[in-house]
Image (tube, rainbow over all chains, first blue to last red; front, side, top):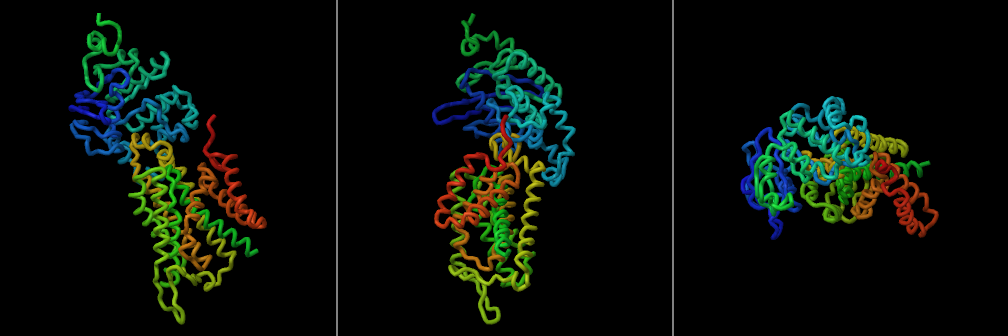
Length: 249
Length: 288
């Protein structure tokens, strides 16, 4: 589904991502972990097109994304959430989901006029479903800026889903959450997989990563130091040393 | 009575100018180019009624098209830059338009006299209203029907997905891009709609003053254009209307009796208004 081939992104002398090879299979939940500054977020930003790669290739369903601008990558089926939440604070919860309906399917379904200048009628059922999914139905008219932290995280996930992605990039979705919220998030991620969404999960919180992922890659200083199933990663000596802390026993 | 009708005309035309900046400001862009589009519309409509003998209504349609066309052409390169760079780029465009009309001669003989734009001396005798016997009151109603149409259009946009997309871009370009919004298309479309509205405003302005010249379309007019939606706030179009009434009706006309002191107070009152209502008269809904 997604393939990174010797992908690099340098900032001046800093090699944020350095020759990364990665293969995410369709239907997988793929974990990307690593210490702070190991290049995880940069990888997400390069995949979504916010940064151009310094070298290397990104293939999505066999197609090279090099020449595809950011907004078109979403249409191709790649959506994301941000590590530091980026909602449209002065729009309502409902409108946040409305503006994100930019999938290829949405663009074909409605005519230009209905899509841009029409009212809210045609999309109501779909947005209601997203609100239901994220437990925000009772807050639909609230401004996004007024939501509590956990609700904002949920809305951001719903907004990414509004684009009907095939591949969802979650950049530290559990940051700042308590264990109850993490359990809910885990449920949601598993539900998304049931719907056929492939997920690349960038995360620090081991309790989440180890519980949901099928496969994990570990980054350190922009390079992949290990890859395998959660059990393999937990047992991997180099990973324990670089990241999980503790002695390599 | 004519004095008040005249004032309401000025407020109407400036409202169109303010609304043209309002839609661009929704996408987070501060543009000083609106006075330039206004000038293009003014000269286009004036030349069509005076030189080509058109009726004013189709001439205003042509103003809208000219304003929109120029705005679209300017929008593509200008909107690649942001913030202060955009302010400077649009300012340069506005001055460029003004200097173009400063040097623009196109006169033809009409009976005994020659009519048409004559460089620095301006474009006199735009006499569609007096020639057709329109009273000041009728002109006022005519102008305000266009203002109402522009307000209705922008109000409709605000209820549509397009309006939400404009605001989303204004709020966070990076996030907007990541949810699949084409920033260039959205910004240029806002600029184009703004250019059309400013063009109509300019066309109306040319006809009620009957005399236009390059100096009318200076940096001060550009500043007013962007000040209206900022002072008025971005919650809806009525903020801009209120701001125009406040500036043109109260600060400029209402304080005329103060003589030279007016200019001093003018600045102070705008600062005061912005301090009391930092996000404009009708600002964004408040955070809890």
